[in-house]
Length: 142
Image 1 (cartoon, rainbow, N blue to C red):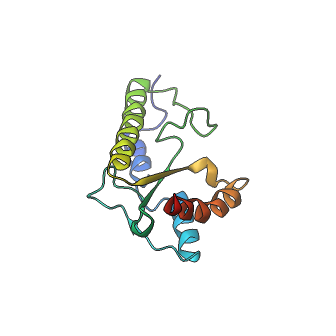
Image 2 (image 1 turned 90 degrees about the vertical axis):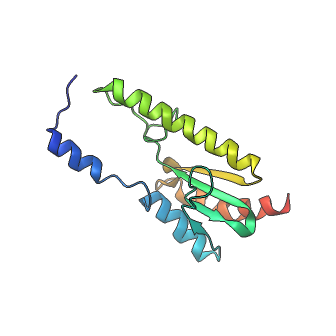
């Protein structure tokens, strides 16, 4: 199956996709800041450059887009019908890289929290964010 868009249109569309400062990530950052949490962003010297790093709590938060990170069983993860020879390996690499980064972070003693884009949709966002401070603080206690 061929692409429905021209190369120029597809290139423009792909260039508009952000790797950081995404809407889900901004939602989490804004909420945590309002709750008094301070964090660092996209720390390069940690595996996987976590979206948020809370050094005080020895915690990193990865905010994953359901499509780009292959959220299995999620209604927002739909593999494109066209160009599957490109998309399947790409998403598989992302999943593998996420798993590897998480294992390395855990081995370094970090607590890793993954938040999926679908957990920040209208029907779930309040519950997801409401539980976040307790989860982070409970990690510190254990």
